[in-house]
Length: 436
Image 1 (cartoon, one colour):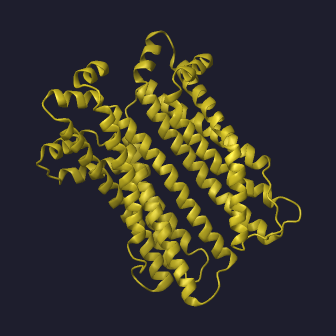
Image 2 (tube, helix red, strand yellow):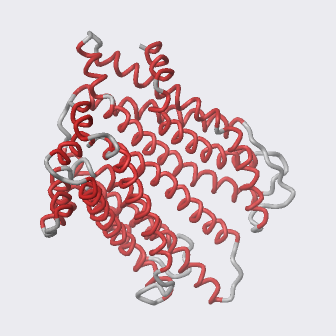
């Protein structure tokens, strides 16, 4: 089956482009920051510089590893879903579920390994640039030399390959076993995340304004609330649609399709909610913290600079991987509906009405994701602002939030409409015949 996997990659390399991109970016980020471990371990590095480097590598390395898994899992789930007919044909030809798993996992491991190897060069240059940033901000001494060693190299290779293998195994397991989704387990984790997130947010009031760990419970609480909302997104989307009445042809089709496909759209809503919630909470909390330090007239400490750097980098990583997951999910969800679009056109719908339907669907999904993510962010941001500044509402304005919403809307609507327009180039009869 491994030989079959290699032939599959050679015959259809375009199918694995998204997996390769996810593995490449993930490995580059992991190796870039884990190179700080190698740099900190060199002889002669002072304790302050070593602590700054190690903290950055540990925090971002953990976030990066988790996001690599979710990004690769998203792309592989799309890949396996698009190959449902091929997998069914293999089963009818005598292949066992175990053999199909080995084939898909083998493909994923090869692609992830190639992506990780290609990322070594960019990670080497990225680590140099990152060390320069730390040195320019005074977090690391100028005498510290850069080192790209075994920690960076092995962590990038192993984490990327293991994430790809695990994600591929889970994706193909769902496809071959044809099990119904266990909504009870999903609901349990959703309510658990909401409960723990609520406790974390409330615990913010137990800290003083000068505590170094003040941001931690508020930020983690907002993240957990975002995760809870993301897991409950199908039910929340259905609740919104029940109260939404659109009378135009495109709007009517969009609402009916969204009600029927609410569970499938959770793959789009999850990264959208996580991106909005985590980015909004982190950027506004960092802005409140920076303004409070500036108002006090005390220069920023090394710890404060480390925290600011970490927050900005983590948000950057979240943006990259959330966009990857959004684009992959939307591309798959739209191209998968080519037969549906053909049937609608044969029934009398014009291409413009079909595009209008996709636009309304994208708008509803964007509004839902942004709304839930914003609620989760505010749940953590308001307690942090109250404790840190004695004000109820941050006075940084809506500029940051508008930027986050613009990115979310551009990715969601842009990908949906672009993919739908390409799909509609196929004649309606041909689309129905090919998909049948």
